[in-house]
Amino acid sequence: MTPPFLIRPIEPRDDAAVAAIIRAVMPEFGADGPGFAIHDPEVDGMHAAYAQPRSAYFVLERDGAVAGGGGVAPLAGGDADVCELRKMYFLPAARGIGAGPAMMERCLGAARGFGFRRCYIETLTGMDAAQALYRRHGFAPLCAPMGGTGHHGCDRFYIRDL
Image 1 (cartoon, rainbow, N blue to C red):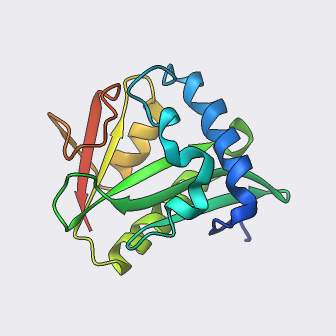
Image 2 (image 1 turned 120 degrees about the vertical axis):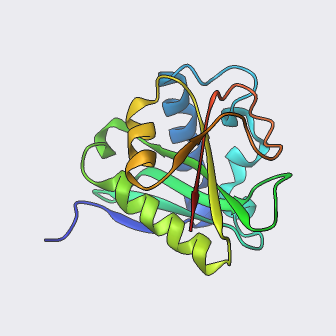
């Protein structure tokens, strides 16, 4: 059976839609203050930001419209073998349809292809569905953050081997 969505690499034409999704979803979970990814400079230029070495960002299309995304990039301030799963957000219409697991696998596959050995994630209390997804995909909780993402608003940290 064909899934009700398509996952593909981000294109320049997707930048505005992805920025709008990030700015719509993060406040749902109280992640709109200082120290959250919603304020990262890359939000308005995701295609260019993820065109960097060992980086990839994918969008999820549903009914011809971008409804989510997720990516991987080297962990800022981290070891060379550690990537970060970054900015994986979905609009409500793209939740509960298998998009999260599919996006996770696409991102982890890209990370393996770039030669990363471990993948790190930051999130926060209240993003329960996301944390359940991470655990189902082999992520283990950490007691403290890794690297230097600048996301001091996050209070939950996970890592897994690739």
